[in-house]
Image 1: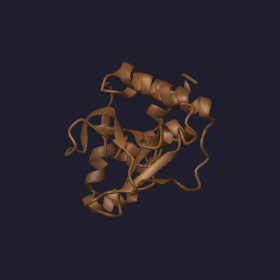
Image 2: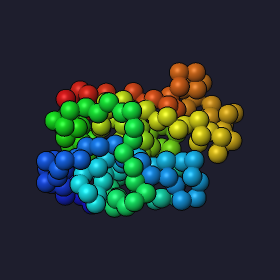
Image 3: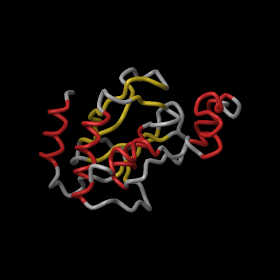
Length: 167
């Protein structure tokens, strides 16, 4: 999908009653892993994903996910105003769609979806990813010593700055 089509999709759905809601669904292979997206309407959501689905690090893209009975609204989330979510989505299309890396440990679907709906570029399930990948030592090589100490796995400030500077 190209940037213009994504921008048009955001604009066409911005008045839907559930627009901008943070959604999640469980991974089919590992039920402990969640995938996050942003609701557009009753049947579609936008999500951040790698271009090649089998890679932990790849060129990233914003794509449409079809909502089904397995998608649920995230609980205990303080969403931004609808206006800010619309702006954040538009900015993220320009900043990230095929211009930015998807990285499982640094900027994944949860980082992105929380960023554009709440302003916080954070992934709460990183601890689960670490366990699945048996990462404690390899983690140092992925995010570096500073990233390991500061929790860069859980929170990524670089994309957050890109979004908030445009609001």
